[in-house]
Image (cartoon, rainbow, N blue to C red; front, side, top):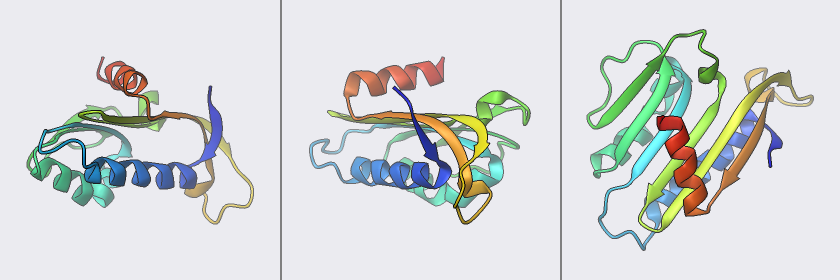
Length: 145
């Protein structure tokens, strides 16, 4: 089941999921998987320090975006889409680490919500998220296929 969500809400939820992933005490020192879809390379660049930190502690980090793939932080792997590929409009974050797993998948509805402070923040997505390991793994597999 999907729920309408603005980009601002997706940012808050994504950051919360990443914080839980980074601090989960049950995973020990096992590496995990981080899969993230960014719209364009410049959106990744604005967030790359978080992904570089996750890669630096041994997690497998895969990001997807449109734009040049060169000069990525060590341990961060890129999948590059053409700028007009409809997949780059989607919002995807999948995190898997030991018993902890979460996923957020949102599809751009190409509409805007009223009352937001910015045009970009008002973008509306049909979003679904889960903290169930089987569902998060399925979301990651779908994105990696």
